[in-house]
Every structure is written in structure tokens, then in C-alpha cells.
Image 1 (cartoon, rainbow, N blue to C red):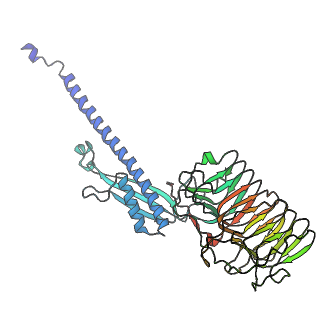
Image 2: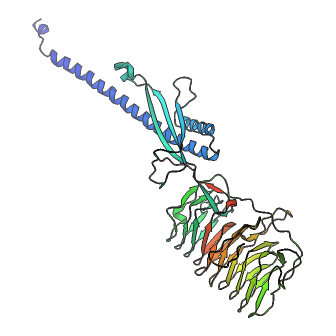
Amino acid sequence: MRVLKDEGGQATVFMALFMGLVMLGFLAFVLDVGYLFREKRMAQAAADAAAVAAAEEYSYSSGNSANAQIAANAIAKLNGFDTTLANNPATVTVTQISSGNYSNTGSAVAPSSWVQAVVSQPIRTFFLGALDPGMRSLTVSASATAGGGQSSPTCVCLEGATGQDLNMSNNARFSANSCGITVDSSSSNAVGVVGSASVCALSLGTVSSTWNNSNNINNNGSVCSATKVVQGISTSCAPTLPAVPVDATCSADPFSGQQGGANYTVGPSSTYGTTMGGNTVCYSALTVNGNGDTVTLNPGIYVINGGELHFESGTNGGGNGVLFYLTNGANLAIDNGANVNLVAGGNTEAGSATAPSTGIYNGILIYEDPGGSPTADAGDSQPISIQGGASTFFSGSIYAPLAAITVGNGSNSTINADIVAQSLTMNGGGTLQSTSSANLGTLNLSVAKVSQ
């Protein structure tokens, strides 16, 4: 009985019980706080994904806010925040913003507009609600900002569906003024830049989503850091080209078999004009000979029907306001060492030449038959080779949507051209400069990335 009446050690028991309750309280607090942090991270991930989806949808649907909201809701649901639940639904709020704080360390300037998404959902805690009724339901919110509304005019459009559409090597240079390259190839080697070659443009877009940069940009090849690379674009580049000149009965090559060392004038209103009339002439082939020939090409449209437009090495030839249309298997070859000076439209054979409006052929220098109208033919896929080298100056667009184009040996050449082709190969120091042409299309750069 004396032992039962002994009150010694009771404090220890109460202390143990008290400490146990405190530990349980701390454990409950830790579990609930950890759960809330986890939900916060999930909400942030959902908001990031929703903002990206909404920004892309804004761009692709020309600013349709309803479509952007639908896209954001769908992506949030995939990330665990369902707005359609009957009980405890999530809320996704999408806002398009055009001014204010824009934070993106990877972008020098803010886009014209961007998108913010806020994701929230009532979160019920496990233990904290028993201690404080006000903590039974918390709203966890997160926001993200994704840039949208950015685009790039296309100045080189390569339409090959597979394989390497752009192949640059051996010190080749491509530079574009506020425009970019669009590559339709879906292959992992769609673009290759090697051997100290370089690409500097506003954008480089590929249909391929598997293009492997490390395998295809190496050996001192480079893409400028300012070039926006976009993989997995959804729309191929296939611009609508103008109607072609009408084919006609053509004269034979006026210079075939002639000796060099003479001065010639060819084209409309010349001795070597043909009966097509107006400013259009047609030849089965046209050879601008070497060996010191000097050939002046009168302004106008030159239809080359079936043969070769050939500027031989040593040629001195040029023309202002000229368009060469190649059809029925015709092709273009400019030999290494040819001195060729060709300007589409314009009236100056010089580096500052500007082509004025000349109707549907405004600014076009070379146009290879794309097929279809007006005769529903299969088109012309013969290659175009520009080897330059001595002193070659081009100013004007090259449209050859079915052909491969090669530019090389251009250490002393200037080629200012927009290009539409199946593929473009540049080597041997070839140089190409481009500015945007309104009819080649626009590359959407809003494959959005979270910026805030």
C-alpha cells in the first residue's frame, strides 16, 4: 500500500506524455507543411505548363483568348489540377499581358505580348485543421509567364521533306538581316554546319523535332548565339510563287560554237532577240562564253527552255532588270572564275543595287519551273550551281522549289538573295546574304518557354 501511495516519478510520466504530444504536434506540422510545399510545387509546374500552352495557342489562333484558356485548362488537368471536378475543382486563370514586368534572362527584349497563368485549388490539410479551423482549407497559387507574339520573316525556305536540307562547310557563310531559315526536313540531320562554316540569322526553324545539334554542328561550325533555333515547327515552308511566263517556240543558243574575245548584246531588242515579243525572249540554251567575251544582257525576261544557262569561266557578263526562267529541264551553271553581275529589276550593277517593283516578278532573278500552272507540267528539278570566285555579284531572289542549289568558291563574290529550294549546299568559302521577302512566309517563334 505504501508503494501504491508513493507519488514519486509522476512528473516523469506527465513529462513523457507531454513530450510525446509535442512530438506528435511537430510531426503533424511537418507532414502538413511538407504536403503544402509539395502541392505548391505541383501548382507551379501546372502553371508553367498552362502558360506555355496558352502562349502557343494565342499565337497559332491569332490571339483567340477562349482557345488559349481551353489549352491551359487541358494542360493543367494533365498536371493534376482539374477544373471540371464537381467537388474541390481547380481554377486556372489566363491573362495576356502587353506591358509590365517581364523577366527572361534568355531574351534581351520583351516580346510584344506574353501570357500569365495562375493555378489554384483548395487544399485540405491532415492535422492543422484540428488545431485551427481557419487552416482546414488553403488556396495554393502559382504563376508563370511565357513569351508569345514573336515571329521571324523567312528569307531562305528549304522544302526537302527528308535528309539534310542545309549543308554548310569549309568556311561558308550565311548572314540574314532580320529574317531566317525554315527547313522542312523531318530528319535528325536536317541542318549541318561544319568546317568553320557559320549561320547568322534571326531564326532557324526545322520541322524535325529530333535534329541533333551536337552531331551536326561541329568541327568549328557555328550558329550565332542571337539566332533563335526552333525545332518541331508545325507548318512547313511552301510559299505561293507567281505564275510562270508562258512557254513559246524558242531560238537556238545564239553563242554556241562562237569564239571568245568579242562584245555581244543579247536579250530583248537585240540582234539575238526572239519573236516572243515585248520584254520576253526565249532560248533553247544560252552560253555566255569565256575567253574574254563581254556580254551585256538587256533588261527583260529570259526563258531558257530545256537547255543550260551557262556562264563560263573567264566570262564578263551582266545585266540590269533581268529574270531568268528555267523550264523543261533547263539548269543554271556559273563556273568558278566567271565575272557575272546580275540584278533583278533595278538599274545599277553594283553592291547597292535595289530592285524596284516589276509586277509579279518583283525582285526575282532566277525562277525555275515549280510545276503546275499554266501547263500542269511536273516542274523542273535540275540543280543550280553558282561557283563564282572571280567577281560575281547577284541581287535578286532565287526560286527553285524542286531543285538543289549549290553555292561555292565565293571568296570574291557577293550574293544577295532570298532562296526557295529543296536544299542548299554552301562550301568553299561561299557567301550568301539575305533580307526578308514578304511572300516567303513567317516563322512562328512562339514555341513558348517559361520566362518567369
